[in-house]
Length: 419
Length: 97
Image 1 (cartoon, each protein chain N blue to C red):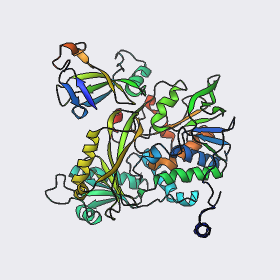
Image 2 (cartoon, rainbow over the protein chains, first blue to last red):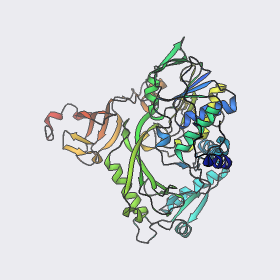
Image 3 (tube, rainbow over the protein chains, first blue to last red):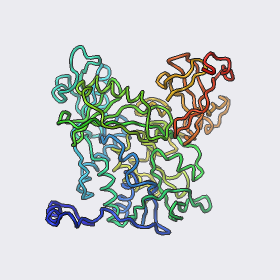
């Protein structure tokens, strides 16, 4: 692997940028590997990277149906945070945050991780109490959390509607200063490059069409580029989880696929230097380095595999953003898009061995998968290498629904559209 | 997306609330096998393609509807009355509207 540094940038500038090597190879699939990861998104690529780095398993392949990073890793709103309330979620997402903090150095790839803070606005006294409780839960786990008053919020985000007559008056907020954003595509590219450098074969345009079984055990996959055998097959395909596992004979899972839309405005000068979420509805907004305001709201709330949504949600999100930050109503929308979320029944993820021998499952990310990318791969790699979950993902098993140990962060019940 | 309500005629999706998979049935409460109840509460087929699902016309007649919709194209192929009005679609004022 060509190491990236200020010196290499200078050297390549002097030679007219003609000598850069491709960031990863494009190998043909081998007939067999020690492990296969289905899904070349953020979670699949980080799993491959940590399998190679932490567990010495380098004879592995990542199979991607389309091109690398064409799914949710390139469709999210780039937010990274660990401001949960349930201890099991807090520990997992905080481990992810710690991996984020060293990620650019670890991968030798600038993922543009920016700890600009995530601020949740409170609009009622009870919401402020709830945030105080969540902040305390975070601090008990050693995570940074600050409860801000109205004046502090007004100083931090000048564009907010803080007028006394505001439809949803701002009373304060919960801030996680270490949270922020990262460049989503760079995360996929960085993990791909670093995994490739350790010998991982990343095979694009290779769709899994079936599973090979021997005596009830999964021993490989059938693909559009031929049979590939491996004693361990990990599946990390987000919204397509039900579809892919159906090929292995698993007909029903605690997952529904829903579409989540996201939006970006025309670029403007710097106006918003943190991530802000609207507490009266569901909206999160930040400003990209290019200047565009990146924001999103709720899922469309019906099962969907279409990577596009409907207009009522667009209208709802636009109303929210113009109530919270009135100046945004003067901007033009540059584009919007949709991604397919693997909404789990309790709103928490699944990183587990099974559901069949030789098979491993990473799914159920709802719309919180991006921030989890490093820890998800790290824990899934551990689970695949050692055939048992790490303590961090032990609560995220598939059988928790059977056992009654659901992790329902919002207390919303078994309704995917509510998480 | 518009749903043709048998009672009210074609209406925008914003008038409706989604009720999820319409094929699942609650097991008899006398069934003590946990698996049947776990399957009812948590497990879904989640198909890519035609999906039978429930919608509540909350901003209209408040009837529950059984809708067959393609989850890939959003195309709706049939809408029927659900619950105790099942089979009554043809007699509803919105029929044929």
